Length: 383
Image 1: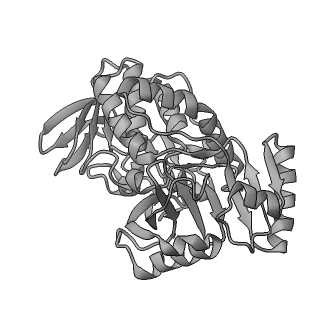
Image 2: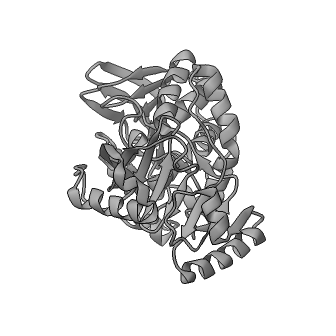
């Protein structure tokens, strides 16, 4: 059953790309939306990401997750156009393909199989010779043996997208509350009632948990509605390089390289379970630099302009939790792990449809608390 938009505000906990995208979509459908964030909107994992839109390059082996990612990618151009029109900010969407460079004959043979599989699935990709690869990206090391160009994928500047979504939401009437010092969900035995914060109490017909890596730590939620989401740290760095040194997003052994329009080249990313420790480490940055310089030797001469770390919101089966919970009116939009930026359009549509009673969430992404008879084994696991 859908939630009537006049039964109280829709309160969204978390002002990252997922929370803001969902707020933007709900507001477009007539909901009164409030977004609560303990920090600045779009300043946590959303700010720390690389903004890659690459469901095929990621070579996801989970059919349900891959299908959702590909659906969301197809929605991206229209989504960005709406956000740009509502905000006046261009998030710099580029879908000019992603290059996956090989540096050994074994990798080249694997690429051949990969391209065949992509073609069978109806995905456009080219296998490039060594010479063709160097024509595409002359800065790559001479040891490169070839590459695959996966067409239709690309990147978006996630920091610009975050700023655009904040402005678009505000222009659409969404009330954003940053820097909330205290927040708890209030409910009775059956359903959510609202959100209590240090700035007061807000009655809510629906509450959406889009709290990223902190989704399992939202106060006031009964245990049977707490999703098993946990943080995985990713470290990254940026180099200041001449525009055009690397022309498109490129995967190399041990790293990916994402050129931005402002001359920064992003290099990422590590993946470590360190709890909520988001420190940048010498070892993590050294490993990324080593991989990047081995693949693109000229990078050794450029300035490291920034290093940072973010906490990805992971789940035991690496699928996000979307839709309702056993607590009436309490919904999840969390656990997107590596795909939060990519899955923003599809997540926003899905949550808005669910709240309006138009559609249900596929079982692969639904939440079933531990011990529930019909829960899948992966969905029963805890962090």
